[in-house]
Length: 486
Length: 50
Image: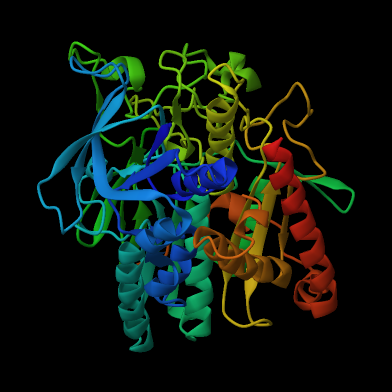
């Protein structure tokens, strides 16, 4: 009997658990244990709609325990605090130490032994990186369903002030120079602008997109080149055109240094420092890895061997720290397995990327202002599935079975910013890219132009609504869920 | 508070033509785009699985 422990129940961890359970079929003698500090699953892409009051939070979350009970997966509502990949003095079997967050088991801890471990713990929302950032400070977030609800309430109050005739400045973007998920910030700006227009208060509202991207449309993937109607254009021009059409302004290449009650301070790539007053600010935080320690058999701390300084887990990537000019597709991991600790995997945000995708930049003051690489959504799901396939093979065919691979240089992604309700009243900006990490050896522009596109219209709006229902259907493990690709 | 000057990259960006705006809202054209967008997303999702 093999035991697989999966840390985290987000897109990567939940996908890995469901796919592995299905791959192992009726062989219930093999145990899959999911450890997550949260009782609920959250379809994070739809938090954007919760954040503008278009959708109640209950529609984007559901309890995990019934899904795992139905599918034969064990569930521990707990957080991992330490990994012991070589076991401990009593037993050489690897183990993970967990602390229960389950209200029914307060203060309990457990050492869980395993044969295979998947670290899919997702991001630590590092609001502390910028003083005053976050819902406990002076800005809002849409990273969790609860944060999104708070943002929706604040937006409602802002709209009320606009209706009363008071001009308002709404700042939407990222709250630190090293943030990722600019696509989510862009989508929220798109939605807020639409909501203001719907409410009939757009003329008094100034919407400002504040970002660490050096140019619009970078999205942390170094921007994209599109081919449209026989012309080659860029995501920079495409995004600028969307902003001009919607009268959204932008501040580019910015690192937020401090957020006060009604103003924030930011530094630009040229080193200049500015202040910006606001009435509403939704600023995403930078991400870090979850604080998990690692120990060898003798109890020596080996955290730095297993994890990068950012807290993300090292896998089969090239961490040599090459200069930008030497970055290559081969730097990116393919199997997500730790080379030093076999049968230990990291999927989704939890793996340490070898470097950014966008060109790294610093201000003359030495402040890093460069988007971190996004690895949420579709890529996270694909990684979860790939790792599950590897583990299933090793359980079924033996430990020598080769690992499956899914490099982000061979993986595509879609990003749809959809706003509005109703079949004919919505609008969306949709992008697809292949691959996520540019491969200039295979494609002159780094990506396949046939599958890298951006377009606006109702089609994206319908697609986004369809994906919301499909992915929640799949995450609930409802009939034929496994037919839905990641 | 005074509005910020528009970022030069935005003020220099092109606006969509009337024809483009109509295409974005035409249900028949959008139905076709919907099929193409989903086919493309399905293709790249499956390609990533190999």
